Length: 139
Image (cartoon, rainbow, N blue to C red; front, side, top):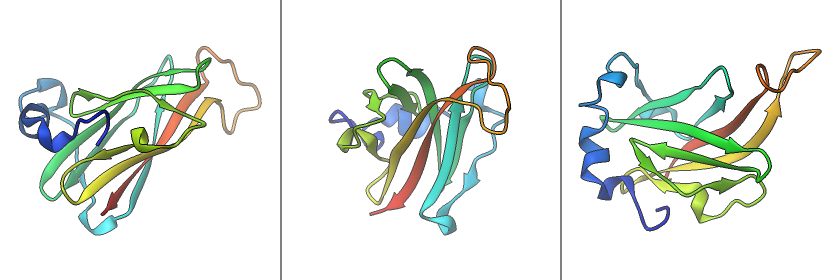
């Protein structure tokens, strides 16, 4: 639960957001039922954005890293269209955990800012990216 909100309590997000949004028609959702706990890094920059797509117990979930504030060291994200409170890089608490259903949670961790791995020169505006790690765990 994040901010007293859970994906399972939001009928629109749980059942209709992905199904009726044509922007997501061509996304592939990888089944992770047999891969738990499952980890994936999501990145965002001025020129690129990654969206996490998973299928769990037959339901599709879209984890979207929206924006990171490098000064505040915080990021905003949403799951199936539901916006969650910002999470902080140096503070991991209940705001970093979201109930997907009654048996699974997404845990957000390892917020990192201005990253340029494998580059000798990193130009902040076009090449640097921010990232976080999401982990789906069974309760």
